[in-house]
Length: 274
Image (cartoon, rainbow, N blue to C red; front, side):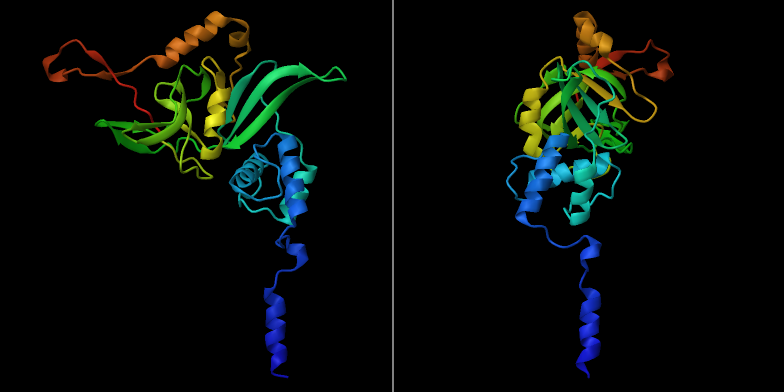
């Protein structure tokens, strides 16, 4: 009789199948990977192994769909994956990149193609990101805000492999405005945490760099700040002007107000924000 309370306690502690927490089979994991890949999430190999790439794909899915971000593949998440639709870019008709600051994801949008039924379609690949946390930070003696600029930009410069800076090291950086870049980073939290850059998981950084060639249009937006760049896609001169604007150096005001001298503007080196 003394064993009965202990048995009841054990049964209470063991999660039931309705909780959605039981371990998935390899075939179920493969099904989740296959479906995530079909939807456009960057899964890596579809092999039935819940590896780093699969976990990041799941996190991107959870972010985009507004689900609780756990990074854990359960039967509940698998059921949600089965019934979800593919992410859709805000702009269409041309190849570009979109950074959705509200969802904290990046959508890499391919050239538009026509399906057999005559409908237009663009391949989309989705990764989770971490952008500026809007906190103050110091760099080169200057106080700045960790802000990811909204608007339309163009990849104007790139670095390959690791690049070291005052604020840390970035991996395969694709610069869009001053020192703000889309780049691989060792830490990509589920929430905004960068100095203004757009961090992506390390496993995909090199391949993303190959896709984001110089001149690639990048749209960065939140709920209220979306701006289309279709005219840039149609007019190369507008895109060239945007590239020059993105590469413009930061300037520091060296005015000595006590001497009433004309302000002196001096360019300072690009500071990668990480």
